[in-house]
Length: 335
Ligand code: ATP
Ligand code: MG
Image 1: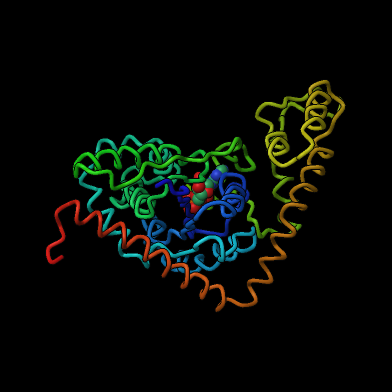
Image 2: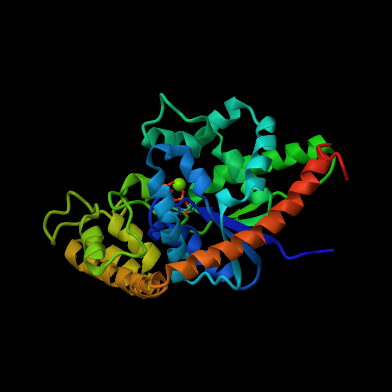
């Protein structure tokens, strides 16, 4: 029996979703929902792994993320939108999977390493944070998801997920869990305005999908360009110039962008012109999202209702996998 692959992704409710989410994952999800059974998770339990000191932030942002989902065009009739913490099955599955990974392997995960460094947690890593790739594996495998549309930072997670899937299946001698494939788009890692770290909610370098015109303009103004490009007539450097990085992603006219790059390299093209062009593109992208978001925000009870219904549907799917998992582990006693 060949079944259409299942899609799962999620986001941590640690702040409103930003442009990085849009190019890394959200845009793909809107397309995928037309063709596949798609689960989209608000990862509140995972957010707690580095936010136990700020519980209200996580609580408050659940609805913000849900509003962003609806605003970009995730349709609850096509995608199952749910809240992670409400499915105890996911915690249960993590608990078993944790026995199939070593601490040394967890410490080698490059994304987790980088996140620990950026959060200054080197000396005090919460065990839950170090093990979140395992919890993420549980989230994916509980739905038997084969496709995971994520940004480039998540590639090591999917690799670790598949190692665990193979170990689990090998251990129980049955193909119960399903290996997943990351769907990483070309521009799978959008940098922040300074061009250094990836744009991230937790690093304060993000442009929210709900940003107003002033915030969009300020964000573009603050972008790192070429510090040696002092006069308009000076030749400028394109590589590492964040405005060009963004034009490559957000300007649909690729030929025009290439011409602008040549002109910039030759000299005679000012940052202001480029920044104005980029601002216009970002405005055109964000304005309809912001407007739809404002509409949905008028009825928060309805948004929570959508999440409740999605959570119930998701629970059924995860519970079915959990019964198979427990039976395979020899942990089903009365049936
Ligand atoms: P946090 O700082 O709390 O970790 P975040 O901004 O990294 O937040 P997540 O909720 O961890 O966002 O990530 C959700 C999804 O968005 C993942 O698939 C991730 O790969 C993708 N994503 C996040 N930031 C970017 C980015 N800058 N570029 C591309 N994709 C991104
Ligand atoms: Mg993240």
